Amino acid sequence: MTVGHLFRASFQNMADNFYAGALRISKNHEWQKLVFSGGLVKKLEILRKMICHKFQADYRLSAFSEDTLLGLLILSLVFSGKIGSSIDEVTAELLKQDEQGHRWS
Image (tube, rainbow, N blue to C red; front, side):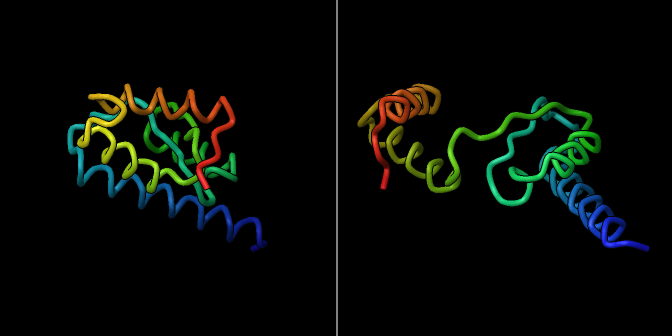
């Protein structure tokens, strides 16, 4: 056994756990595409490949590194009506502002 075997087994366990969690949310396998948004899964292509293989789905990487906080920001802007009236509309506006160099910190 090597360190590589240990990491591969750990990554496979992660993929299995993600899949088991997804089945609790969607027993009918209703997902179409995965979104990776940080941590190891965004950094390690091998882990993404293992997860995609388990889900039999393609993926995209999140445009933002702080996806959880961004999601809360988007929801608050939608509910308050300050930028737009839908999640897609607010997300597009934030992406546009980000491309224009707006600093979020």
